[in-house]
Image: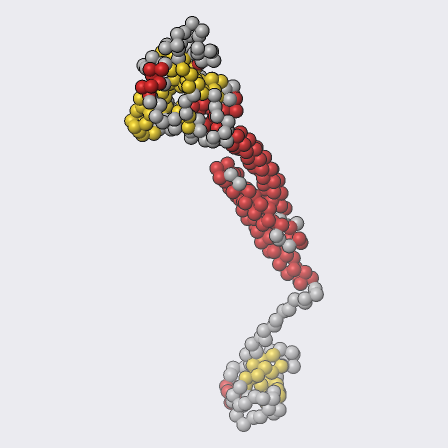
Length: 360
């Protein structure tokens, strides 16, 4: 190894020796490299010659190759200005991420707000769910984070106010509808429990029989009769129809007024078609069923003649003093199908003896 140093060309500056002594560091073996320091302070690369051991002094050529520079790690002190710069950068990154999250939260809140309006317009109270969920999404965050989500807080408060207002409106509407419904049910309940209101001509009456029927004012409620009137498209109603309901639909007397109605029994039809009039929608029904028509009592100035020659003078004395005994009409009260046996309605028919006997 010493020979190798001698074989290398020597180019030294004037006044410098050709070799300089260097001590072999501990732990090195022959052939390994180490850095030797020249007298002028520059380090060159040297080799451990054969037979040399750590601690021995060897001659190293002055012009040996410079030693490889030792990597230097430059550290930044944690408590110094460099640490502050890192903290600032991390803080900036965190703020940027927080701003992005806040923007996304705000957009999500506005989306749910408008979706709530769509559902409220078409599905009623379902829209309230979206508005209150928007409010909960913001206020479910920890208190220290809410200050960073100011835009989400704005839409959350707006959603809460909108939801509360819509809830009040829905409650008022439901209360009004329920009140109207209860009022109607109560009035119809009184009508259904009043026997005169649901009367219909009894079966077995002969065609052409005339009946004067009195409908009290409580029976004059058109909104309660749509399910109790059948037929009427041609003016004839099927047996089973409420006389007062048929009279209301035919316009014999006004809604809420009541009055007397003249009922004429008809032969009947195989099919009765429903119709609509004066707030009552009658139902269609298949027969064959007996029928009847309703007429205003005021349309008869004197006597009304039917196919069996029966004569009726409503609200008047049917027995004039000049009438002979054999031609004197007989006043009879005809049976009417009633919902109850109490409070029988005022129904009077006046027929001649011949027609009465023929009916029996």
